[in-house]
Length: 335
Image 1 (tube, rainbow, N blue to C red):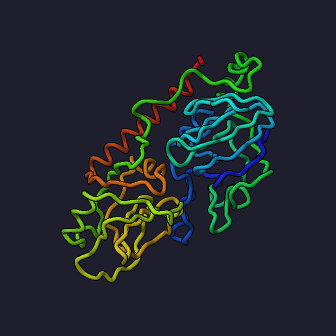
Image 2: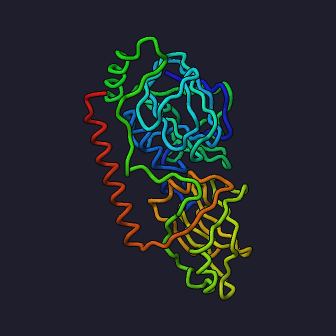
Image 3: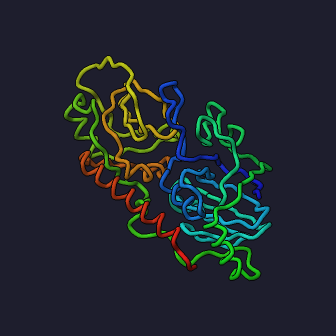
């Protein structure tokens, strides 16, 4: 079972939830920018939530399905079509052999995730199939996908096989069909233009000048075109510390906000370095990391303070909802 890439898109890579346990050796985590969308796409097609999927940025790939397949597309709305007909997102979609999936204009968000039942059959490097482009490691030959790449996938789970059998009955002469049920409501992140991002103040926040502390929460910050999977560089009000800090590099994580000497904050993301020597003024709440991942260069971000306790509460609630969703999908017996 396999697919062929007919057109690569702007930047399409294989990602899972990341490469953990090796940061002490200087190996970055990498993984999906929007881990929520990747997890849900995998669950919808009966895969383990950490299975590899295709992450597409702004301009998606064009893909030929060489076998009947069960897919799910989550995250950004990049106008997906099968043989010219629009297909729905956030639900399982049964696609017939020789169908062509194409992505068009982006309507909302920045990154879409395509999961295929059975998952992509790729080697694990340090426990992960994620692509780290700078090191040419993981994913498909350590690089972004190119025209004529063929990706094989393994045998789908029994859950996926059962759903494919049901959907095959109703597909008729069409090239695809989808379930009537889908993922929606409050469990979905609030993907929106110019988002409000909740942050927890960091270990060096106290060193900001009083004026800079006020600016952090009252001014908008624009995502620059120098942004990438390593981090979003922001511009707007310059943030300054009250004294020059001679810092020893410290561990950083996804969502760490640093302020370099030029005063323009940087939000560290999936391909971030393992340590950082700039002041760490804040941390994006885990609940809003998918929202950050779907923001595009040119958009503006507004920061809002949240307590650590509230951020933890929201994170645990989201994880409980995902666990309930997982059980609901696995137990569905109807389309």
